[in-house]
Amino acid sequence: MPKFAALVLIVLAALLVLGRLVQAAGTGQAERESGGATLVALGAVLIPIAYVAMMQARVLGFREATVLFVFALGALLARRGRKGLVALAGLALLIGIGFNYLFTQVFYIDLPRAGWF
Amino acid sequence: MLGDLASALAYLLTPWPFFYVLLGTLLGIFVGAVPGLTGGMLITLTLPLTFYMDSTHALVLLVAMYVGSVSGGLISATLLRMPGTPSSIMTTFDGYPMAQKGEPERALALGIGASLVGGLIAGLFLVVLSPPLSRWAMTFGPFEYFTMVLMAIVLIASISQGSMVKGLIAGFLGMAFAMPGLNPSDGQLRLTFDIVALSDGFKLLPVLLGVFVMSQIIKDAYEIGKRPASLRVGGASLLIRLGEWRKHGVNMLRSALIGTWIGILPGVGASISSMVAYITAKNLSRTPEKFGTGHEEGIVASETANNANVGGALIPLIAMGIPGSPIDAILLSALILHNIQPGPLLFLTNGEFVWALIAAYLVANLLMFLFMTLSVRQIAKVIAFDKAYLLPVIFVCCVVGAYALSNRMYDVWVVIGFGVLGFFLERARVPLGPFVIGFVLEGIFEAELRSSLQMSDRGFLGILDRPIALTFLALSLIMLLWPFVQALRRRAATGAAEKEAS
Image (spheres, helix red, strand yellow):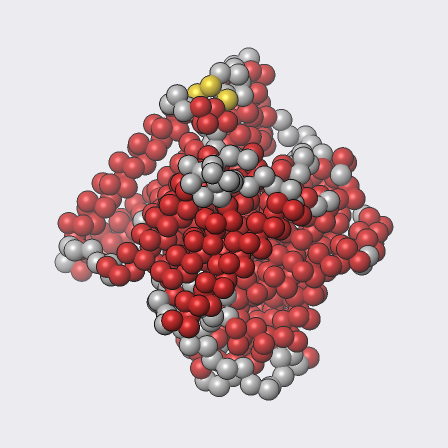
């Protein structure tokens, strides 16, 4: 079964590449993306990766890592003034501490804790 | 049948089930109305929370969310020219121009009324068709199931937007990602590349969270600067007058039938239904030139069909365990995660549960109509909010949902991995619907194919003795080859025209 799926995928990919080559020869250049949006999208991948890696390495527990994560990703996406950052810090604390309480005390999920805890 | 439905409706009117239908509908409408948040996202995020709930309550909540989210999309389609949910794309073509002309209340009233009619007509089919269809499906053997899943994948790939090759790639890629782990036929590990965590494969929930939620977070981050201005809703009535119901009656009935039928076809979602209903309404209209300029018929066709699709798509899910749309694939996963075996026996083994789902669908449609009519002005004020604060919180919910499954970080990495993959697939215009359907159905596909081959003395030729399976296979082949035949005919026609011209 895996071999069959791989074979089908290879054939389809070849068809797609062939089609694209024919199309490219006809139409020329493809559209370009804006650099800023790409950086924000990249941040929206890298910050979650850092967040999960910190919890996996037990550098930080769920509560502390979540406070940092919500603030960092929110700050990247919001790009607001000082007032917005204060509100964001409040939200980060609320989510970090509140979710930690909710999920560990109410739903009894054993969320990651820091190694030094 | 009617007795079962009546007792299910009575059950739904007891406090907790009613609370869950109400909650699901309200959340669904809100999430559906906000561009960048989708029904699939909401249902997938809610799924891990339902582990702690009674399974009937859980599914009732998820079905209500499904109904709400498809309906809520019309608000942003009309007021922002951005479909709040993919299925309301066609509504933007006439809803927004009508709102711009100073009649947003009328556009919304038509959309809300049409949604209710579409939902209820499909509900009627859901009640009438599901039991006999499940009895018919009980006669299916492995060959029938295998060919039906094949048909579902080919169908969704061939009808999904963009190229069919990309749709097929998405479907087979989804299937390929479902293969690592324990091979169910011989008990051996396969495709694990010596990674211990992979011996368990990719679990359903983290993959769904990645494809539906994480990829959407990245997409939203990519488009975070685009905040549209919302048109205001005035004080005019949000109800359609009796004469208008009559005026649009034929269009509503036709679009509801199209929506229900496309919903029943395995794998095809609400966006296709509203597109087909819209195009049909345009072709049959006396004033086709008005479509796209704020024409009532366009709004009615699109909104009736997308809501009818929800009911139609529940039919194969309930009767045969085959998802009628990508969101139904999440509902199928919910059944599996709640230890309810989907398939034609569901009516026999969990009759009360099934009727409760059907009743929840009907009640959610009525609540949707009430809630949308009463509070659409308030929702309209908040749908264009800045999602910068919401996206990090959504990801935290993803992390907890994936982690809680087996208390391991591996599943969280799977969420991120599939999120990135989903984002790039969408950027490359490879549809995610076939990917999810392929991933969810691969288990059944492979198991049924193996059983068919083991049972048959003549290998695959055994299918020749199974007329239903043969029909499914023939339909799959026709759907697969049809675009090529069409292309050849078009080429022949242009060749002939050129010859004539010269």
